[in-house]
Image (tube, rainbow, N blue to C red):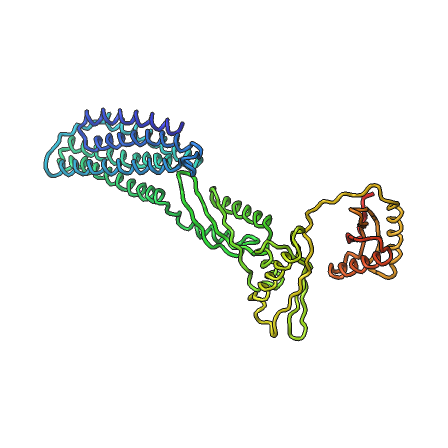
Length: 467
């Protein structure tokens, strides 16, 4: 609607200035009429470009249609330059080669004053809508009409001085009109230069000055981002497209990578509304722990490891871990995966300073994928649950960290008895100590109840539990 209103205003102004140019013979007024002709063409182009640029992205224009606004501004730049060239040529002719009789009048000056008011109101309205919708086409149109205010003022001054010259006999004042036309041409050229530069930058995908540095600094401040390796910015109409490449710790999970990417997108959006594409590169952190290096080596092979431990023995670093492999693999296939991982671990840069070498021992176990069924026809497991609970609670004098054993469940799964329970323990103890206590409790339960094949204990602090 703002663009359409601009078209209507341009038609009114062109009609007024054409009438005045014919009635006064003023080159200044003629140049203004030509300028208004350009403004009408520009307003129509702006209206059409805004309608097209608002269309959503499609299969043929995956980045949307925003470049139509930039292209329309390019056309307006060309029209501005042509108009300025004609005004300068005509002004030089009237100054040096031929004389034109000018018929200035107070009424003509008054009509130009009305046109000046229309220009002022329209430029302000367009500028407000352009800021609200971040539209380059509307901003260019507003810039046109803001310069019309100055150029019309210059023409009023030239026409007034010519009128004074006729009344006072000061013939040199008659040259004020072509000089005023040169002033209009200067304004038009200034507008064309500014608009042309911005249009060329948009069409050539020139990044807005300082925006890349701002984005890079802001992204590097986010948790989980080691550094910003590259930022690319392009603009299409009122939309920006930002590509960011960041380095992140290589040991983070895929879910964490996704969360970091979302945080980067939000942070860029706080700087400038944009369509953001984030590319992540895994990197080793400075001073990375040897266990993180081992986990990264396993992840590269698609393997899962846990229970990592290491200690020095006779000048060697002895590393132990549990490796989870596909439960359908044979021992030979699983051992090959473990051997390949061992060789890569020995070559890790973080272990290069080990005096006599690295010894690696890997416990191979199946990666759980099978969901077993419970044997409902098993014997008196409820009685066994009560016996286990009473036995564990009777060990509190031996295990001072243990406060209570509860939620004991015993089930027969594929002809094997599995036990799980919750044990409240001293919440102030470190988890390494709690893990050792839990392992010893599991051993004591299996020793007392040899029919139990598997024991799983969940440790928890002794906070009040829901009944």
